[in-house]
Length: 169
Image (tube, rainbow, N blue to C red; front, side):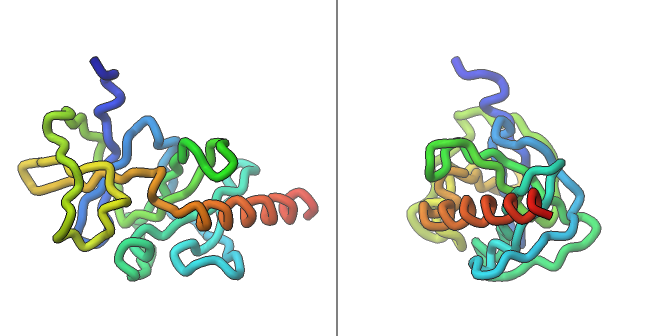
C-alpha cells in the first residue's frame, strides 16, 4: 500500500492547462521575485534566484512547454522543486515559474491514466500521467524528464558559476 503523501499533488496553472507535481518533490512556494539573467541559457531558463544563500536555477514552464513566455503578475509564483537525480546523481533544486498555484489534491492511483500518445499540446514524455477530475484532466509532470541531460548539465554549470560569483562578491 502506498503512502498517503505519495498521492498528494500540488496543482497549478500554465496557459489553459492545469498541471500537478508530486508533493514530495515540492520544497516551497515563493512569490515571484526578480530572476537574475544568466547569459547563454535557453530562453526557457531565464536565470537564477538567491534562496537563502543558495543559487537556484529557474525554469519558465510556459516557455518550455508552449514557447510562450509568461509575463509575471501578482499571482505568479516560483515553485521550488527537488529533482531527484540530476546529471551527477545528486539532487538538485529548480524553481518553476507558474502562473498561479491552485491547491494540494489527493489523487488516488485509480484516477491516474498514462499520458496520451497523441493529441496533447505538450510533449508527453514530460508527463508521468493524467488525473481525471470532474473539471477535466490534470497533467502530472515527471520531474526526471522535464529537462534533458544536456539542459541539466548546463543548469549545474550555471549554478556553479553563479555560486562562485556570489561567494566572491
